[in-house]
Image (cartoon, rainbow, N blue to C red; front, side, top):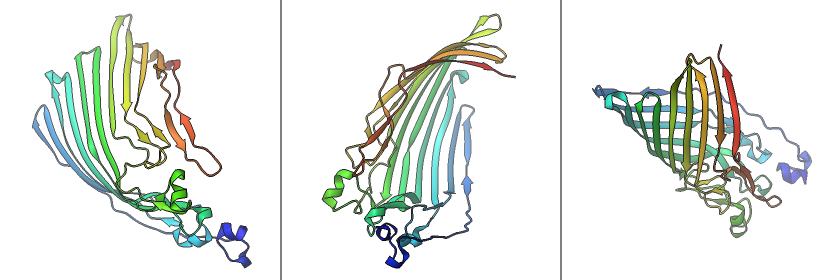
Length: 299
């Protein structure tokens, strides 16, 4: 049995040692032109390149000696947008467009030669993130503000042919060591749409005190936390609302606030653990409706 688990010869009795090291350098760059068209309108663009560090595949077996080192991720990002303000600075409207391509993306791959160690950390191919972010604020009077944001994120695997198959696919494919392509699917853990909105108050009430408060809601479209091709591990669209009300001194030395989070008591997942042959899908929930208070003293 030890021989099979380690992928070693019988004489080695399942024991093995793996060692490798690498020294790499990288060049990061950023080009960021901007044009102040009018005092109220700014156009900008950017192009940048950077890397996320490589990693060590600590679950590598003897048969995976060449896979101990995972290469760095390389990111090339292009952005452009406009920033504006209106009504004498009381209102702002900003738009940002982006397209980010990541090569040598780090994720799990299937080892089809050893079912006992079916997946490992590796460079799986290419990912593209593209979309937009729209932000708006309006403060008609200094004591009251409104904000709203809309974001779209088309995050797709452009090249991920040998992803681990969900449990319900494995029998049809011939076992856990058989891969399943995720090319063209939304990246695990990323939702396409996000909508946020809220209000805040900061009103002087005399005696060097201000009444403060806020209310905000964030809505997210559905997310695949395990695998976008699985029927399990999906969080349906959900909206979370938080509110707060308090007092602060005008010099900000003291702040007292009562708050409530998830006031509608939504039941939603923040992560999932994938099922195996011996364990079910494990769902980790976000916090239920929560009340509390905060006292802050600044020195």
